[in-house]
Length: 459
Ligand code: FAD
Image 1 (cartoon, helix red, strand yellow):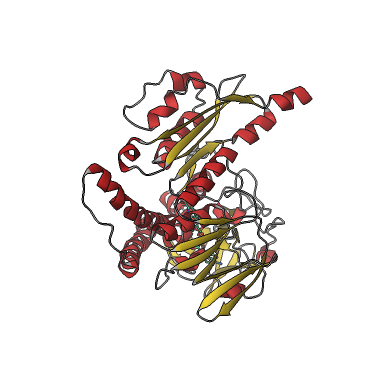
Image 2 (spheres, helix red, strand yellow):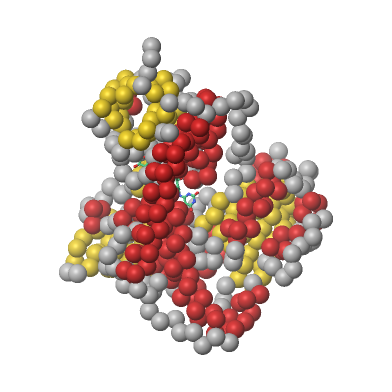
């Protein structure tokens, strides 16, 4: 049977655009559908505008810091509308770059929603199209809690186009998105109450990093409220009131739910094609991104595994190479994926936390806490902390975690070292760059403790 396309991609975000472009470059006839904005979450309502907002928030404190270096700069006020206009200008530029990339590669773009009619046929806007292979790259959506008045609050998609900055904000959720927005609004001058279920923010990250983060948030004036259970949101006069089950309530100009994301599959009619999903709604895929239907694939957040832009891009690129390129396809390692949280100060992390590593073996832990050189002069109370988790038997680095100035920039290099299988001795014989904070990674001489021995003793 002949099809309209060799490959059709549903979703023009990070993963979908890369997959379509590379497949077309290999000579395949490729179509792609995007229902909202080209570039998807990352470019429009994710990584890129978020990082610009983090940078906007940091400038105020930098203006204060400059005093320590002899500048008489005054912090002044922040113009929210002017900043949003600059941010929107940059996002529009990126949007059109995505469209140009697809056109240039010969991909046929459809600005429309796509859904399955059957395993080879899609409804794309008003058209019916057929494809030999189909890639689902529809990403995820932010969740709202199932409580009365939840519609009175916003989610991250709404946070990038607020007409004005709220003076008081109640932020619910301490995953990386909640943490980053707490820092953004506090840095720009809002009063922030941050509410979360556990006793420390950023569940899933290294425990000591979480402790340091909690202290950093408080130093930035963010009020932390733990062990919360949501009850309802209501409009009380000019403000929104968020009530908890234990009777506590918070009045503010804006309630912001940062409670995680779910795979975006509801409108795809997956059942018409027989594509299976798991209990969390993610499309079930094998190691090669193949779904339960052999010619239908899923990449990026819609399979709900490592929900990061570079992972979606790598999956999309690898799949296109495998389907249409000359062998061997370019390969990626997902064993030690470096990532960052753009908190204030930021976090960089790669590999296993101390706790995770100690569950599987005996590990040497190296830590250090220090003040970045510039804060000796600024006087800002902003310590840096870093940790290396080392497998005791092989001396391989299993995890590297840092909170402090420039942590994300350092973590990319640490990811390379770990992907190459670096040991503690490789770190020790590397010459540092002086004077930097990064040299701390290669001057960790004294082991702080051994972890995982209790597990060994119990065995
Ligand atoms: P997406 O980029 O979400 O693209 C999916 C696209 O599919 C969307 O454009 C959507 O409109 C479209 N679509 C959905 N259904 C259909 C349909 N039926 N028909 C047609 N089109 C459809 N990751 C990082 O690595 N670093 C960060 O700093 C970072 N920060 C983030 C901050 C925020 C606030 C958020 C929300 C996410 C952030 N992420 C970050 C995660 C990152 O954005 C995602 O991992 C990445 O965008 C996933 O790419 P994707 O291609 O899977 O999906």
